[in-house]
Amino acid sequence: MSVSVTAAPVVRARALVKTFPVRRNLVGRTVERLHAVDGVDLTAYPGQTLGIVGESGSGKSTVGRLVARLLTPDSGTVEIGGRELTDIRGRRLRQARADMQMIFQNPYSALDPTKTIGHAVAEPLLAHGRCLRREMYGRAAELLERVALDPALVTRYPSQLSGGQRQRVCIARALALEPKLLIADEPTSALDLSTRSEILNLLLRLQEDAGQAMILISHDVTTIKHLSHRVAVMYLGRVVEEGAVGDLIGEPRHPYTQALLSAVPEPDPMTPRRGTRIVLTGDPPSPIDLPSGCRFRTRCPIATPECAITDPPLVPVGAEHVVACVHRA
Image (cartoon, rainbow, N blue to C red; front, top):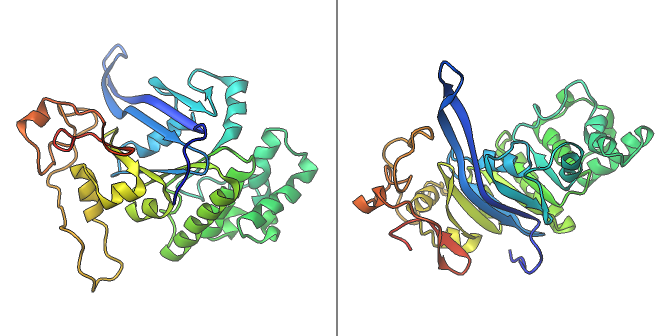
């Protein structure tokens, strides 16, 4: 997939930092913090999907919530369509959220079980004054057709739908306001393989039709490869490598990216594995007590004493391909 980046970016995040207090002393002062996101930069353009991949606990979902302003960053900035979102509150933030919508991981918990599907899909339109209550079910039916669902489902409840249908309902709701940015946080992890393929192809088709920017968050490298134009690899709250999907998948430069890609199973078990399986030893360090220097050094197969001293920044290693490793720069 090829996308021009000559247009202005839809979303631009700079130096995002987010920590969470985990322990306080007797007077209520925070003495320990969990470092969820630490200095993350992201940019996505119209019609482009930026994939964010990494292990559980790497900070992927927190980044998505920071961009959607469901969480407030400790520091850093987020711009949607050139509009700064970091410091806005109240009505201005509510208006800005019409430009960005989120598809959550669990479609059942994302829907109110006491409300009909028609109400769930049209609720954003009602909240932003874009339709009248008497028009609600008609507009919802149109949106359900857009995601290949029977319009008659507007009178059903979430418990009466399958997992794949519920996720399509969540996608229809996210599209209701015609946002500039979709943030999909593990949108297929709760689905079986056949339904997962349908949802991924639906997201791809919808993006081609509307030209929206998308941030796709997943631990599944195959999903990221299928949908993304660019990929950012996260480890312990930081981006360690970023580049076009073909460059990064075809020639990964960071040892952590290489290990992730080597763990992807072959579709045909009779086909010989391409490349060597890289097995990382040890557990990831605690995000509360981070190691000095490179955060990956405690598990890295090529770590040297220099890695304990130098905290590597992202540096170019090719056209629009950056990596944070002292041995790969």
